[in-house]
Image (cartoon, rainbow, N blue to C red; front, top):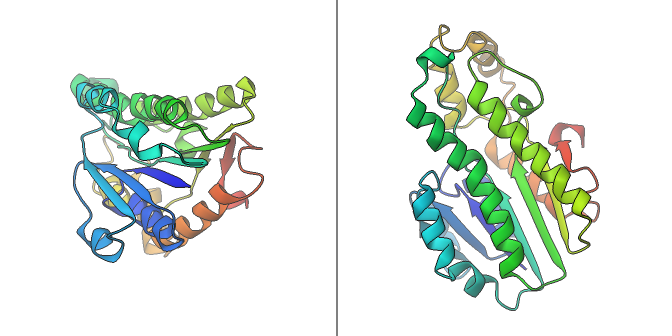
Length: 241
C-alpha cells in the first residue's frame, strides 16, 4: 500500500502525511515546497515532488512523465488524499481577480480530478481509495466564497459520480473534516468583513477554542480512510463519525 497526499508540506496535509507515515505507509507528497521535518523523521518512506498544482501545465507535464505509474507499480492498494486547496479569491464578483479564480479552480478541482484518474490508471491493484478533503462550504453557500463553495461542491459531485460508476476496485469519498486550526483559518480571520461577511463567526470559533488541531483531525481522517466501509457514503462529514 502506498499513498499520495497533496499539500503535504504544511497544515492538515502535513498532519495527514505524518499520520500515514507513522503507520508505516509510504507517502508521495505533492506540494510547492518540501517538508524537511517529515523527511527527517521518515527518510525511507517519504518521496517529495515540488510542484505547483495550480499550474495546469506543470501538472499535466508531470503526469505525462510517468512518475506516478513508476511509484505505484506493483502495489496492491493505492490511497489518494486530495488535500491541497485555497479559499481565495474571496469577495463578491467585482472584487475577484479572474486569474485567481482560474488558479483556484485548477488547484481545487482540476488537480484532484486529474490525480484521481491518474492514480486509478497508474495502479493495478484491487483497491484504490480516493479521498477529497471537502468542506461544509460545498454543501451550502457562503457570501464572499462563491469560488470556494463551487469548487468544494464539485468534489462532492465527483465522488458521487465515481460511486455510481460502480467499479469494485475504486472507492471515493468527499469528506468535510470540520474547522481546523490551520493557516487557512488564519487567512480567513484576516479577511475584511467587506469581502467575507461571516468573518466574525470564524473569529469566535478561534476565541472559543472550537477549532480542531491538525493532528487530531488527521488521525480521525486516516482512520476513516482505512476503514472497511470507506466509500459507502461518497459525501460525508468527519464530525458525523
